[in-house]
Image (cartoon, rainbow, N blue to C red; front, side, top):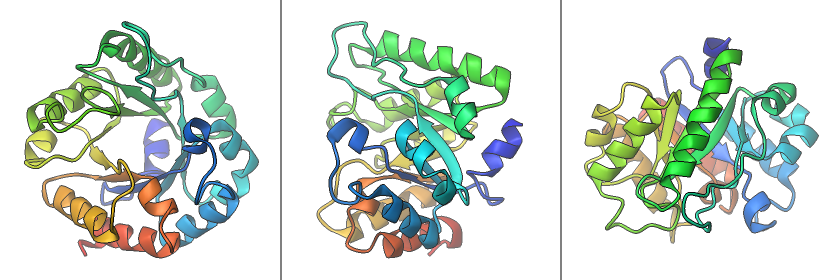
Length: 247
């Protein structure tokens, strides 16, 4: 069953464009997330392979989401916690399966003071997901979501990616860094880049994805740089062309 579920996310070329739309659950509604049904229609039309989202969106907009793979955000991806404390797992394997999801997304932060707890979370989820053939995307961010370039070195990103795979993730989502080939060479499963914060111009994120693909990435998981774009459908189509057509 896991092979079938992964096939809903990654195309036969082994690549995927995943659009993240769960931001309102953490930051509140904003541009592109106020009317999620409209955004979903636009990114599906633009060629998204899968959508990562919240429980509420996944359940309410099930029909709109049906043409693409579905990834359920399992936790809050928060680093604003005390030592050895991880964001709770909001939704687990059973909830994902009831929604018809193909995968769960779990965050872990090597090098942050929540490292131990977040890695425990990841291992626990992958253990249960394996039993039911549910896939897992591990969001591996050295130093946590707010970390800077001094922590997100290519060595640290490569280590974080490999740790996520060793703990059972089916693919990992990591920050893009120069020298990304070192990251992809360190992994025997797919590596996609995370979109990060909103960029000052569209060319920046398009160039970053192009460079990542040239260095062995298997795609990208991008949110704000798609749904906050003036034309989310066109932005999705442009990124899909880079990932799948080597544009």
